[in-house]
Every structure is written in structure tokens, then in C-alpha cells.
Image (cartoon, rainbow, N blue to C red):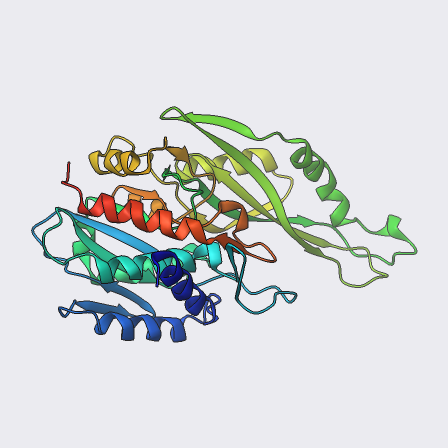
Length: 359
């Protein structure tokens, strides 16, 4: 069986195990059973539904290869996981069970001794949910040795390029207040939804903000993603809530991002910050990142999204995104990934991990 066929079969098998956030146990059990059967044997640590496979106390510089087990929920119109032509069509094909398949193939194929770099394979739960619920936090607490890694490579889909840095993200609940009344006599009340109209118009007209970091262009955006309010069809609403998602560029602190939201709202609504995730450092000055870039033969690109690159940055470990699949396919109704990207990512990472280290 060719490399492409092996990777496709493995990714398809992983996609056939549903693992929306909160339901990762079956997939974690399967990957743990696989890991404990690796020749060696290879150390395996599990906390909850997250695993680290590999030796933490190796004398060589360590590189973490990381991938999350969870996916967003499946769309009701999706068919079964399948291969159509040169693409794998399934929830998680790009985000990011194709990356998990590449990690597993690398763990089986690369020798434990000999390469200049020590590879650690990290499979974890709950990336797609709130920042505080990620499986990475408990792993970092249980295995402080992970902070000694020289680089982490998150195998999120990256369109064949190394994506450096990542956007920070926050979610703020904006609550507008009014006064109830019968909808036949609205002048006796105060419509909370109408209070939101000026701010909604400002946000709709607000252009994306271009920010240069390390010669790369990131776009800061504020987007209303949910809205709720009203008591009944014949009642003037006294409460209206919006969820505002702000994506901000590397280098901006959470405090500064929160202050921008407060300034925008300017007292027109009550603001509650419900989820905060920092940005990730642009680390193209790291020798191992340059080595990985050389292996791809492509220039670095900015990550216009949030990933756990940020969480590794908080730990003090430089991190980048590089993995199979297409960023445009993440969370799509009929998610898919080109099979060729599995092979390209595997060959690039195998060459990177096997080359003499510059760290």
C-alpha cells in the first residue's frame, strides 16, 4: 500500500469515530490502544481524554507535534465519511483528523534513536470549545517537562505553508436594557432591541483593521455572532443580548483588547467578557522554524485565526501551525481535504524531524 493510501485509510478510520467536543472518549481510547502497541515500547501518558506519546526526558531537543481529537458537530446534511476522487470528505478531514493520521504515521515510521530531534506526539481533547476547558491545560500541569520543548508544531490545516503567530480572541456578551409594554402600545415601554441598532450599524460598517507583525499582515475584526431577546410576540422587549467576537493581532494583550471593546460600546450596553484567549507569538526567528520553512520551500504566512499556538506561547514554547488540509474547509457543511496534502505534510515533517538540528 502506498503512503498516500495508508494515510487516507487511517484518516478515514479516524473520521468514522465521531468526536464532537465533549465526546472524545472513544477516539482517545482507540489512539491510546494504538500508542501502547508501538514498538519500543513508547511511553504513553493519559490525562482525561488527552495523551502524550514519547519520551519527555530525552537529551535531544524536543519538538511537540500536536493535534486535537475533537471536531465541531456534524451537519445534518452530511453523508458518511468517504473518499471522492482525490479528496477525503468527512467531518474532521481538514480540521483535523488528517493531521492526526500524519502524526500516527510519523510515530510508526521514524526511528526512536538517531534523528537529531526528539518527537513528542500530543493528542488532546476540547480544542473547539471554551479556552478554559481545553485538554492542554491539565496536560501542561501534569507534565511540566513539556515547557522544555524547543518548538511545537500544531497540525491544523495550513494550505501547505507554515503559519506563524495566531490571532487572539475574546467573546463579550453585550446586554441592552429597556422596559416591557404591550406591543399595541409600544410608547409605554422602551424597546431594548432598538437600543442596539446604532452599535449594530457601526459594527456592520466597521472595516477590517490591517496590522503588520514581523512583516506579516493580520486582520483584526469584530463580529456579532449571536443575538437573543424578547419575552413574547406581543411584548416590547426589555432585554436584548449580543455576542461580540473580537479577533486581535499578535502582540496585543487581552487587557488592551478588552479596553477596545469597552471603548466601542461606550456605556450603551452592559459588557461581560465570557471567554478570553491570548494571541500567539510570531516566532519566525526560531532556528527550528526556519528549518521547517526550508523543508516546505515556501514563505511563512500569518494565521488569521486562533489556535493552540497561543497556549504554547503562554507556556513559553514557540509554536507554529503546519498540517494537511485546507483552512477554507474547517467547519464547512461538507468538509473535505485533498489526499495529496496528507502526503506532503508527512514528507515535510519527516524530513524536518530527520535533518540535523539547528536548535
